[in-house]
Length: 172
Image (cartoon, rainbow, N blue to C red; front, side):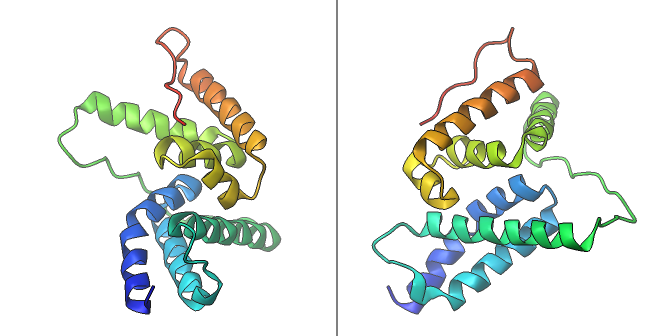
């Protein structure tokens, strides 16, 4: 794959990476910074990429590792206080107000999950990744992926009180 083809492939992955970053950090600006740093790291380390493997899991792993590094750095530096707290913009589109409320509730419920569970749930349920891809990104055994996913679904169901409304559809 030429450098030009690789750069084009990276651009195609931007929306997916941004969505994953946003699910991990919550803040759109921080998510954009994380995606930008992911692209920078990928471009400077193209020699480490194995072209026989899928690009997306490699990028997701870079993004996740950068997020972990930032989390550790923030823990060492102490808490960061926001001077102005803003509202999350309402989703655009032609959806009904109920859909907007449901989206907000799900987003808040995802934020309440432990990081390990949220990562697995987002990768499998939202990004449509296979379990083996998730094992590569998170560097954990497949059994751990399945147990974290199960706990995440159960906890999400409890948070959203879905017990009387049906079940969350299982995605593999």
